[in-house]
Amino acid sequence: MYHKTVLDNGVKIISERMEHLRSVSLGIWVNTGSRDEIRSENGVSHFIEHMSFKGTRHRDVLRIAKELDIIGGLSNAFTGKENTCFHGRVLGRHFGRLADILSDIFLNSTFNSIDMEREREVILQEINMMEDTPDDNLHTLFTELFWEGHPIGWPILGTGETVSAISKETILNYIQKSYVPEEILVVAAGDVDHHQMVSFFQPLFETVSSAREDRSGRSAPESRGGFSILPKTLEQVHICLGGEAPSQVDDKRFASALFNAILGGNMSSRLFQEIREKRGLVYSVYSFLSTYVDAGLLGIYAATEPQNLNLVLQTIQNEIVKLCRGELSDTEVAEAKEHLIGGIYLGSESADNRMMRMAKNEFSFGRYVDYEELVSGLDQVSRDDVVEAACGTFQESRISFAALGPLADDDIDVGLINYI
Image 1 (spheres, rainbow, N blue to C red):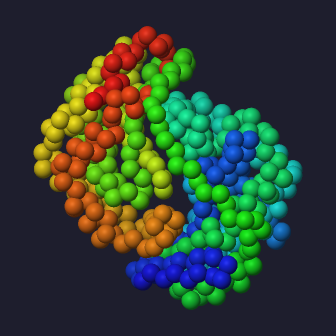
Image 2: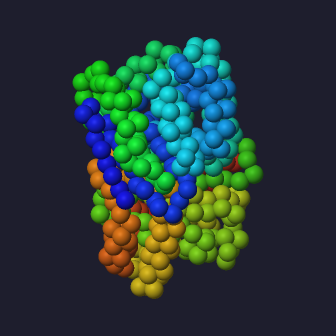
Image 3: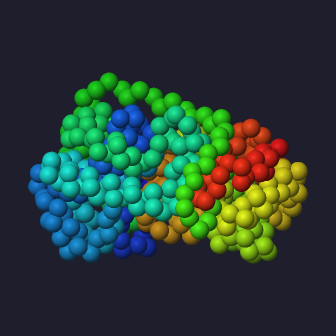
């Protein structure tokens, strides 16, 4: 049973009771992320996430950890391009204690200067680790290239330069600007009573106030295509290429999801079968969708030996061209639908998944979106819709391409990156 309560200041409290569960998943969300930063503060959303666990006015870092361990809780946090979440899962009887800890973390963090300097070094190590991991590094480079000059393309972690410059004042100013009641959700799924949940959170969150005028609206990003190579001494060449896809709220997202599944979204997909299984050219190859409230991209990743790079690109091009020419059967579309529908319903059995879906749907649509609505959207997609999605994504001169590894510009047959 789904419930939503909106406090007088705009904070939303949302729950869904799942009668068969003994656990509850709780998340406190704020609708801000790296795309809402300015260049000089890039990484501040992620820095705040880290610092929130380092002590509050009522608990130090050790007490936070101990109290979560005592109740057998699983807790974490994450920062995305568009939102930040502090979440945990416990047995239903411990919901009150988890709610108290997460509320304290969210509302009362002290951002101690000594802890900030220690955690800054941790984040700089995280950035270095990402840069030392070729596939992670490439995805960051590709996203920056794809949405060049727009904050949605910037790294969530920030850069060494920007993170080194973030001060306590930067953090407090960002919180004042972005952590405002209209952008906050408290969401729970599982063994939870909505009235008890509201009784607990209302006194805490109704005191949150807006100390600024309305946040300026997000500008929609646009990709114009691009080409980038970063030479690096590695055993393999890592590549990413892709084009624009529908946003999270566009009705065409269903056709794009099916196109992604057919192209490279699973082990029976065309790219996996042609490039890995039939030719043995790669260990890893897949396609992926990254979608936001006003934009999306569909990309392809592969890693291969330098001498096989152009053959991999040729095979990718062949498969995309086939799909754009309509070489796709109704059976293949039906099988892709069944794959995605299975994933939807399997995910519905997880309290964590349901909690996160409710929050993201509230941010994107302002309402609850049931699973049957998703399945209906997929069922209505035709073979021609999938072909249209393929052609719309991979348009000549609109493709972005990034590569990382032991190669130079003239090692790549650029003609293989242009499609239709």
